[in-house]
Length: 326
Figure 1 (cartoon, rainbow, N blue to C red):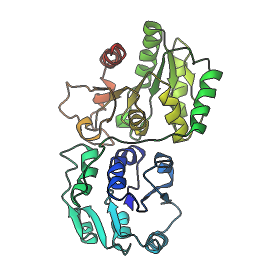
Figure 2 (figure 1 turned 90 degrees about the vertical axis):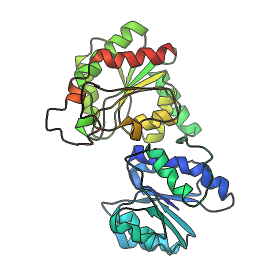
Figure 3 (figure 1 turned 90 degrees about the horizontal axis):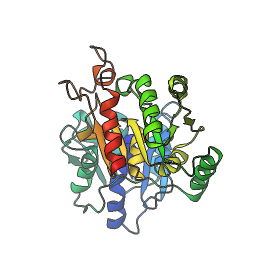
Figure 4 (figure 1 turned 60 degrees about the horizontal axis):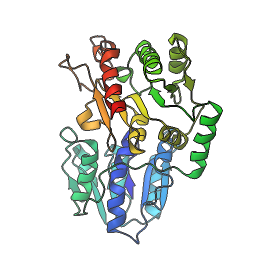
């Protein structure tokens, strides 16, 4: 069993271990434990036998431990390393328990990995767990699989929105922290420029709690953009596969887009693209490089969030032009 409880982007990046595990254990049962809202990242992955889910709001730790212990795993790899995942690993009854050297949690494992989270990309952090047990690395690129059902959903949506014969650029204004979100007014302006300069259609993305961002962009824009309907993660991925490009904050949809091969213009501020950037596709990373506080990892900014507020439309547009030219 592999454990990565959350969040969506982190779970996407953790899928880099699955090809290698399946290659090393072709006849074994390989399961993945994650929180319910991340499950679509893993469903339909051919390297997995089962996706186990955990709801932190309703499930208590004892019931989760009991469920995992009954499955009698030989090997548990904890890629998350918080107290809950460490205890689940410890009480799993597994002969081999792999995890990272984080405080007291190290004692929950019998194969302990030195964490390099502040030194290497998150994909390499995950792959270090495999290196610790001498598993050869097969494919260090994140995975996200969609079925024909989601492909048909995306096709029907594009047809109904009159997007089929157009260059479509996705805009993702959401993000978990406000410090990671570029200004709504800037997204509106760059959307108008892209529509006028490239004769493209703009597709506005949103997830739970984010629809108001899209509504504000539509209000400010001079041109008419298209808002996606409510989707699950697999439907979102299928829609993204039909796009020529995405302009996005650091977020789960950014990593999903990269995993399905969509070129990504990625806007970064408080997070470090060298550690958490998109992997597996053409990418232009845009930052306000005049600042020396980039990569601070702060969810609240004490100086007014200049990494987002002072990042100009012109700078982000350079990334769009670069990737569309390629």
